[in-house]
Length: 392
Image 1 (cartoon, one colour):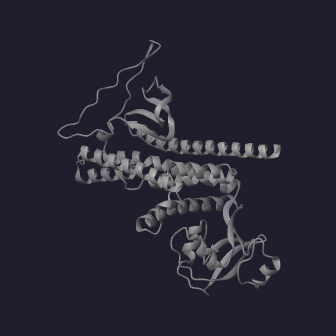
Image 2 (tube, one colour):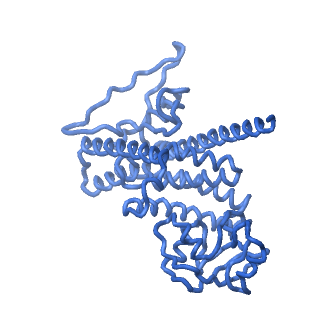
Image 3 (cartoon, one colour):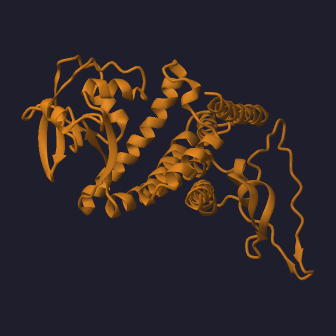
């Protein structure tokens, strides 16, 4: 009874720790994203009123005596913002002017200066584009740094093969293998059909469309040596979508794939971490594409609650999982924010490009309404996919 109680307590502590780590990851990614906007804005002479991590009431806030900018940590750790002066204003015949912020005093002594710089919409389009893209750029660079640390210090994530079910005897497993033909339990797969593989989607792409009986060269690491084996497909490799792992395993005639690490030299690790980050970005675009075409259902997506839950589980599993999930989130945020969806940075970039070409902006009021509708849609979509996860 005491042992069971201690076990449950340990699981509870691990769960709480996982959630806290998940929140830390999200806060770090939000902060670095907004810092990208902030540092680009400062370098290009934008007027910045506030830099905030989180939404809602402030837990902590401090106004700089030097710049007059407000820095705040707010209670809801699921976002943040860098408030550029005049970013959300619109003009019809003329700009609606906001009143200048009053100077503040602390303890009746110090006055804070008004932040310096030009208003957001008064800056040329090319400057605004740089500022808008800087947030996603910082997310990607942080994710890449985490991957480099993981690849160099721990190893590159690769998949190892399990040929037979665990309960099957070794004799049965041996009978299914002949010299050079088929995969063997413990093989670490490096290439399939001449293509480097990092994620499951790489396996799907390398085999997609191949028919049963096709002979596929597979480069594996076996007992520390690179060996090329011939994989004879046991079934057609016709995949329904990017999550169709059952068809993949069936066609490869194996029971499963599990993640291990493979340490390489410094420079190969740098190269593979860069390739890995690009592959992660590709899965984001691919999942959205399959969602729009109906290949993937909404149940395959996740909102903030699902993200925290999955991140918490991964983060509590060890350092490699922590770095891996943090990098995944970083690349996902970078790619997602650059999509041409209203309220996201990518759509704002589109409006800047249109203004650059037309030599005049789209009606600011219309643009504001479009972004507001997009924001409502994004929040509604996030809530919907989280609710779907509760009922499946």
